[in-house]
Amino acid sequence: MAQNLKERIYNYLSNDIGIDLGTANTLVYLRGHGIVVNEPSVVAVNQKTGRVVAVGQSAKDMLGRTPAHITAVRPLVDGVISDFEVTEEMIAYLVKKAEEYSKKMLGPRVVVGVPSGVTNVEIRAVRDATRNAGAREVFIVEEPMAGAIGIRLPVHEPVGSMVIDIGGGTTDIAVISLGGIVRSKNLKIAGDKLNNDIISYIRNEFKILIGEKTAEYIKMTVGTVIPGEPMETTIRGRDLITGLPREVVITDSDIREAMAQSIDVLVEATKEVLETTPPEILSDIMRIGIYLVGGGALIKGLAKLISDTIKIPVHVAEDPLTAIARGTGIILEDLVTYQDVLIQNEDELPAQK
Image 1 (cartoon, one colour):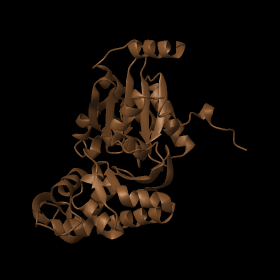
Image 2 (cartoon, rainbow, N blue to C red; image 1 turned 90 degrees about the vertical axis):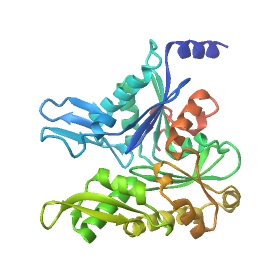
Image 3 (tube, one colour; image 1 turned 90 degrees about the horizontal axis):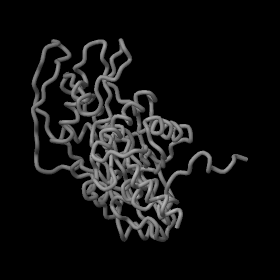
């Protein structure tokens, strides 16, 4: 009874916020309002003063277009913090932006999604950065688990579910049952790697240098992993021989060739996880299928390619970009039920023998 009263008082005085802390994009869920922030994980810093100039979309617009003393940086690399101070600034900015929808007296209670298999040091860094950004309480959840909860898979039941979360910096392949991750694999093959593959391919084949934003645009417009209706787009870049601007036409078969090696690694990793999965869970997955979440799930033909290779149905989750953020929101609605899916606090961890 006292616990319920305390909970109601805290709900009245503070917000509950869920953060999908991604390498490419960060989404923020505010309890009672849904997803209120969806911004690129980019921060522009003035090197002379050390001050943050812009965060999110306005900072991303500066990528590749800044003067020498301003650098637009991504504070998260492969889903983990690479620049602690800048990440702290970014989380503080996003939390403040979310709280504009509902101003409360106390600091918020925050659930943060992190890639599976991160170390205790990396978990502590996320926890500390979020606390320093003004959070009252911080809970950490692994992203594939949050994604599975977000798309309403039966994570607490004795039924095997499989989720592939393809983000910007990492791909998480996880088999889930009874509120825990049974098997998982974390890959550095994700959206950013595919962009770099496209940049390298165009540099080698067409002798043209393009930037990250152009590579992302090509991937989204003509990127496909299985042959289909021919597609093409015109891009502009710098000619490596003359140094002058040049325009070329890129087709879907060019991009398929550029991404082929990385996609093969992703499919092989999925096979490896399935090979070590207990047979009972494997039969559940064969029946239910595999679910793709994250931005990479939107790559044309990827679900069909994986399905044809491993002979298991593969589904693209509804609105895969927001699945993890929605999952953090569902956890916040009922922290007691989802307590066992959270990564424990350092003070709750059992002592090392």
